[in-house]
Image 1 (cartoon, rainbow, N blue to C red):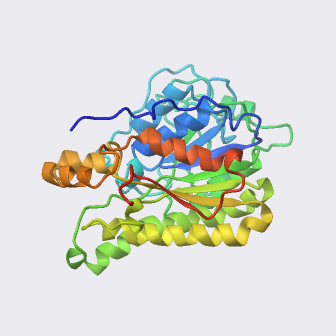
Image 2: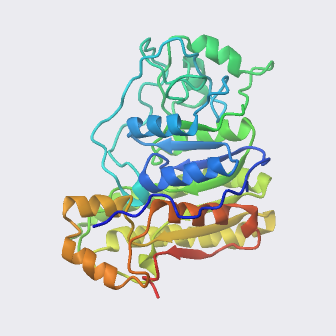
Length: 371
């Protein structure tokens, strides 16, 4: 199968988010679709904090590409950092599986090494190569052992530089920052959101994560497997939603959830993905209806069959056979698979003020599959 470009051709070079106070939070930012969304948000002037669950190597690569926190001081979320005197990186590649929206999905325990000291790490929110925030033991208490990062050798120096005169964490002009986070950990999610909000505000939230979804007939899905899928997608999204809503109200901000076009036209063996995403879409609809009075907008983007993200993994694994791919292509009006940049274009549009009168909508980016 020929691969389309990961970026949408002719993508706008507008600066939709330049001058906006605060940051855009993207969950699942190290996955294929999430990374493309982060790129376009940064390109259009946003300061981005993205989360990843276990694929540290991909997060570091994206931070290096986006420029990370090269302006020095705190990370984009205001999380303290060490300086760059130690240039050795600590890799975290752990056989991560790519899931919906390109999200990494290997299950890890929340909290991890917060508060531990590793003198060989350059997980630096300052000018380090990785640009991923470092957190000292005191800061770990603030985060309630939520978001995970490894402390660098000079964490105390970075921490002092990152704090204001009254001891609060301050937001800098960093372009991007990454934090490891398990969305199923309600307290961890709330702690990270509070740090971001107290460090400058939150104007955009993009949910681009979710657990790995094998293609199974409904009759083959056990109740336990279905429950795990719902907890990893519906409950994870709700943990995020509950934490960010007060701050989106303050900013009259925007929420965009990356879901699926399968809830408009159902393909066989996709219930394990589309059912939880349907619940996510129902929550987004509720937010659009109930929170509009505060200026909050909420929309969904439904990817079709993409050359990136989960579909790519299913193709490579053989779970989506060559024959199945050809059948799918025949059902796509444009006759080709989509690219991550196509999804990012739609997400960034809906998150921007150009879509200021659009809320409660489901924009399927599927090449006409759902027609």
